[in-house]
Length: 65
Image 1: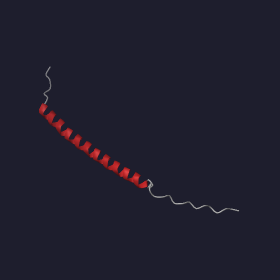
Image 2: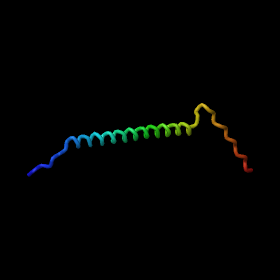
Image 3: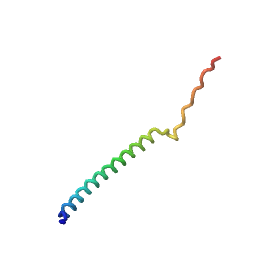
Image 4: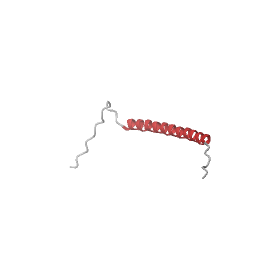
C-alpha cells in the first residue's frame, strides 16, 4: 500500500492564511460589539432622568362636583 503524499508546506500555508482571516474577523466583530455597547450605554444614559433636576409639580385635577 502506498500512502498519499502530503504537501506539508501547502497545509501550513493554508493554516496561516485561514488564521489571518479568522483573526481579522474576530477583531472586526469585537470592534463592532464595543461600538454597539457604547451606543447602547449612551442611549440608556440619555433616557434616564437627571437626578439633580427637580421633578415638575403635577397639577391637581379639578373636582367633579
